[in-house]
Amino acid sequence: MSTEALSPWREAWRVFSSNKAALLGLAMLAGVVAAMTVGPSLYGVAAGDIAGAPFTPPFTDPQLWLGTDYLGRDVLAGVLIGGRATLLVGLSAAAVAVTIGVTIGALSGYFGGWVDLALSRVTELFQVLPALLFAMVLVTLFQPSLTVVVFAIGVVAWTGTARLARAEFLRLAHLEYANAARAMGAGHLRLMLREILPNALPPLIVSATLIVGAAILFEAGLSFLGLSDPNVTSWGLMIGSNRRNILECWWAVTFPGAAIFMTVLAVSLIGDGLNDAFNPKLHLR
Image (cartoon, rainbow, N blue to C red):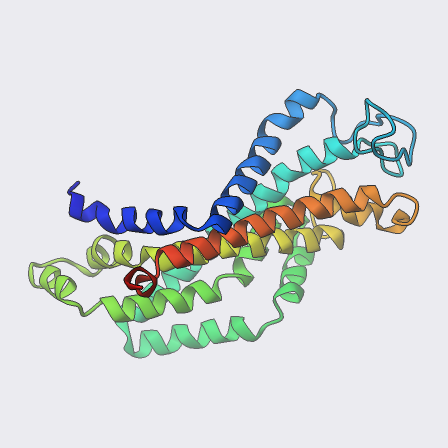
């Protein structure tokens, strides 16, 4: 690969690495991922096991760093294990949303005409639907599981990516390099996947990053309402199961909530950094 092909990405990394807030978000997210990956095996306590007396306050027992909940379950073990499900749902739902959004947006922007009109109306229909309520309906219609939650979040979160992809494909489809590839006999699929999509990736990457944070909040909200797999520990499920004892056991709600806050904040900082990194006007300044 030539130096010229790498230079835009190197320039983007230069701008991103000069953004202290973005680097802080990257470090925070790396810390969260590391804790969720190796933390449970190092800590050695299962999230669902009874580890001590109920309502044990944090930092009072050297074996129970963050205390226990109303059943006596270890809060730290729940935070470490629950983060895996929360992050998995967030990343998977973002992947589903981006796949749907890019597909619909690319077809709409590339072909135009009645295809654009029909797909734009579909996008607008999903935009006006109340996202959380629609996701709740989808989860309720099927047996609550992580797969259903991922699908429900992905179905309600793709519209912004679709509009962005449509704008990019509409702008790029008739540029000189696309016309040259078309004149050389490239088909629609090759033009869309090999010529246009790589040049439309930067804003789509930013959009995907922001969807991850939104999907984590969606998953937490659905789990809080009991609309997730009750057999899989997640941060939202921890908050929901302990909400009735929040006055006596505030730590069982506070620490999972703090984990959600830190993770979403980290993803948002990274998204803002990527937005600046892929902004050509900022590069010119």
